[in-house]
Image (cartoon, rainbow, N blue to C red; front, top):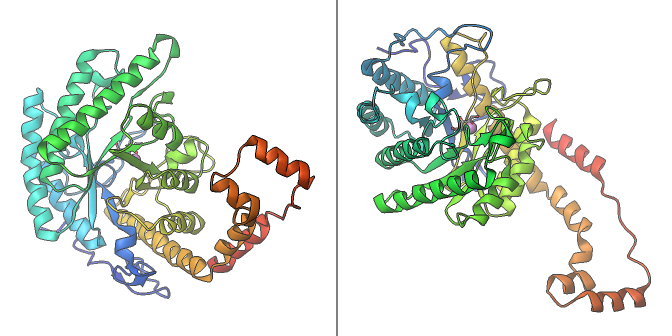
Amino acid sequence: MAAFPEVNKIKYEGPDSTNPLAFRHYNADEIVEGKSMKEWLRFSCAFWHTMRMTGSDPFGAATMSRPWDDGSESIENAQNRVRVFFEFLEKCGFQYYAFHDRDVAPEGKTLAESNKNLDEVVKVFKEESERTGVTMLWGTANLFGNPRYMHGAATSSNADAFAYAAAQVKKALEVSLELKAQGYTFWGGREGYQCIWNTDMKREADHLAAFMHMAVDYAKEIGFKGQFYFEPKPKEPTKHQYDYDCAACINFLRAYGLENDVKMNIETNHATLAGHSVEHEMEYAASQGFLGSVDANAGDMLLGWDTDQFPTDLYMTTKMAYVLMKYGGFTTGGLNFDAKVRRESFEPIDLFYAHIGGMDAFAKGLKVAAAMRASGDLQDMLKTRYATWDRGIGAEIEAGKHDFKSLEKYMLEKGEIEPNISGRQELIENVMNRFIF
Ligand code: XUL
Ligand code: CO
């Protein structure tokens, strides 16, 4: 029986549509700069939020109405949730999904029982994926929920927690292979600290690196070819997380010889918690060759925590799409809505409004970014700003033809630098507005 009988497959109706259950901009097969929208955007839905988020918060109980869910920890209930999930994915037109091991199947009394439970549910994922063609963007393991991980997993002060986490990731990689996932994500969870004085930071970093190497080695051993991602987040739940931001993560990967195996999975609200914009994180990662995937959401300007709201801000999606297009788009990654409806939006239909809005915001952002790129205005301004590097002394420096002595000689002869030109920030902002409205 359908869980959402009142909703048909969401269709593209164009910008003038007022139908709240239609796309106004997301037209999956429409070509934008040589590729279809669905190839650019590669939308993915997060099981943990869409199927498991109850709406409880530190001040109040669950609010979500999910009539298909009997609230039990039975395998049947878990399997049924997967079928409902695929009905939702199909109706929204998702190509991908992502889950943590413990989102989809109940944790058993033993590791062996948990693995068995997971297998029972993965069977249904496999069936549904084959039926619908919707596949896994990336797999991951929940290494933060169970109290055994109170001190972290790979960075725990308790070596057994490391071993348990290794066993969990081993299984999660096998499941990711089985479900043909395009990637595997490490998110720190509790890989950080609350108190620096009870923490051996160097030892914890070494352990995290050893853990990631083991994962990479095991993936090779079983033939899992998906891309590994590291997802930055500066804090929450711990006061300081080692995967702070892209710069910290990329430094870690390079320091420990993981740079050829792991790329970034960048999340908007994590970027802002780190004091960055998401486009900063995307530009930084991409320019260093580490742009992998994106967890799309939005924070609240007035709140200091990870609110995981749906992204609807066209300026933000335009800037993200602009960076994405500049670097040629995703390969294995995609836009995974790591976002949840507010606890007051408790009806099932709100899940549709939320995802439709997010998808449309990115589709429109993609179109605006493509128009900006086609005009060439921003590229021209950038070229003009750096013009001194395209000729004369700048070109010679870039070609490696100079050192401090030759540059001193050059400047002694020349006496003063070329006059600076304006940065034109306000004009650039106006140009962006020209395309947005
Ligand atoms: C938590 C978060 C995670 C990761 C996967 O803030 O973003 O859901 O994306 O573990
Ligand atoms: Co995330």
